[in-house]
Length: 294
Image 1: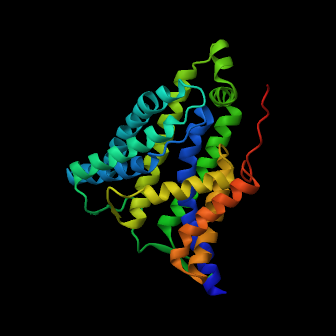
Image 2: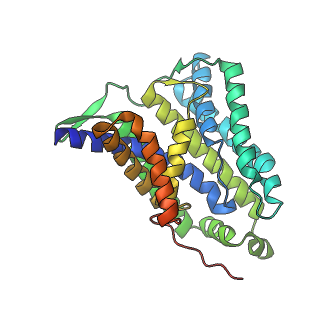
């Protein structure tokens, strides 16, 4: 029983990380029905920038803010030069290649600027030794911070979408951007804003996950974005609550499989879940099917 509870708590903690990544992917899906497959590279670059700025003597808080500002600028670049041109052609999937290519280029830039070896990441909030006891088990405070932040962001994003005029505008653009333009909505600004927000979520996730791992390197983020994508699909693309549910469910299941079968089976299980969801429930657990007029 102790082993089971330990695996479940570890899965919830790791699942919160997947949920954070899935939230960032969902934001661009709201407005453009696209995903930024360079999201993992944004996470990595933000963390490596943080390490660089801290090494120059900046206080950690200022280093984190500067890193997030740079990543926000990358969000604007991604929308303008990798996604918008591809969307000019109806039903084009060119954004898959362009965002993935951007991520690969950013990995190369990071390796050139900061080196290809892993570097130590500073402790922002808690050290790896800080923990609390839950049901007699030691749980890292770093994981609890990520879990709390994931829940907080889900609540904030849902409230934003449902209770604010800008949130209602985002939902309107998601359903019909051309109708939004006809009605005078700043559609381009809303779309750019979604990519900036997605980049900021990715940057924040990168900082938090790097703190948990203790190191960061140019290859960091690739596996995380894959698991985040699976979590988003399982929960339902475009659903904030679904991202949280899908991330935690995936984290718990993968840890149980890793604990009772083999740790090498965690990633294959994740993709088996993805294929199963696409076959049985393509819209995910919580996403609502959209009606389409002919």
